[in-house]
Length: 147
Image (cartoon, rainbow, N blue to C red; front, side, top):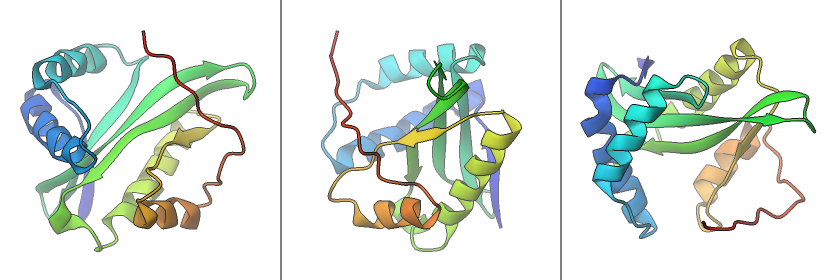
């Protein structure tokens, strides 16, 4: 049975280890100590977003993080699915589908207007998952400016 548990301070070591595993897939840099401090700030400020651990039969198998943004274009608060990670042993079992259904349900409860996400071009399984849940490819280009 798949369940979702709100991230708590005592879960920070667990989630940062999974985050390190997630980032390693695409060789993204990560500073665990910085991530731990960011999670403390994130948990204490509910205006920043929400995060949940994903559990299967009471075992932590992943996590999902929503970060909030206020948008005039969309008429209120929108969210970015900043990260959705499942351990390799949890993939292919429908847990990703249940996670997206959960996030969509929570988004309605939170009165969010829109969900954005990024997916790597090579991650075809994730793309299929999101498209199957009515996400659409955005015609705009996402640009970044690193400060």
